[in-house]
Length: 157
Image 1 (cartoon, rainbow, N blue to C red):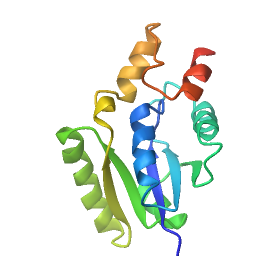
Image 2: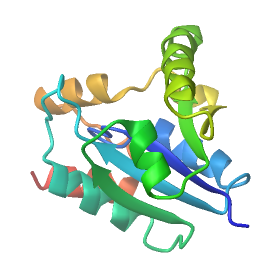
Image 3: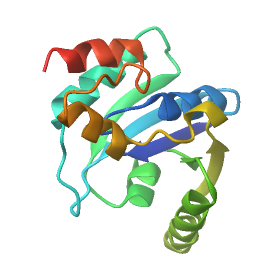
């Protein structure tokens, strides 16, 4: 039986921290769907089509990773596409507090889907999409914070 997991997020943009989580999760799961969720409380900096394309290109040679977007509760989407697990990345204790609350609520909504946590590599713990967007917005170089394939695309915007 294939172990399939959903790694949800806005990925605005996808960072090296996200990539670190995917790399670790690939040692546990047969297939990972990177799910770009439409969050009603957030407005995106990079448009959805760019984010999907950039992440697809970054994982073009990795058949165990696919990229999709969705607009519904994450736990409902995970069930709809046959995922038994939701992957969440953690950088620090604050992330754990926030993410564990969501995991408990998701468990109440669907007890068949388990949330698993992966720590990103320590060297990426300070990176988050909000800071990367702010650096980009102000003309700074984001190459040290996002995968090279994505950095080259962002530079063209």
